[in-house]
Structures are given as C-alpha cells and as structure tokens.
Image (cartoon, rainbow, N blue to C red; front, side):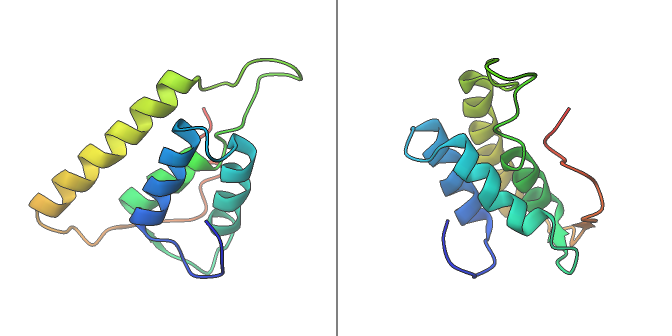
Length: 109
C-alpha cells in the first residue's frame, strides 16, 4: 500500500485483507484507494475498479460517532467475493472490459 506504483489486484486484495485482519485502518485504506480512484488518467478493468470502489469509502459512517456504514462482516464478505471473482477470472476468458473512472465513489451506496 505504499509507493507510486499503480496497484494490481494482488495489492487491492492485500489491502482489503489487512483491513479485515486489523493491520490497516479503514481510513488508511480509503486514502490509499482514493489516490487511484480520482486519477482520471487511468483506466481500470472491471474487477479492479470494483475492488478500488470497495476500498474507497470503506471508512464511511452515516454520522459522527456512528458505526461504519459497512460492518466488519460485510468487509470480510467483500474479501471473500474478491477472491472468488479472481478465481473465476483466471478460469474464464478475459473480457478486456474497462470501467470508466467517472463513477463517484463506487463502493458507496
């Protein structure tokens, strides 16, 4: 989660796993993902865009002092889903689709 190298799915999965395991704060994961989501010069494949969208907004709360909008169990489910999608992607044909970076905070409701 550091450096200026464009992240790949391994990096995104590692970041999400670190949040689940409590090694990285939600705020730090959100700030890391924000850097990549807001860069309109980058194009992302659909799965990477989805994963970044989960991380960007992972620290949202409905109000000050409120619990997170997405609880720990939901974040664990996101990690499991990302891992499933990656396996499916490796087994199936590559679509080559890219997601447009114009969608605001794709992980937000």
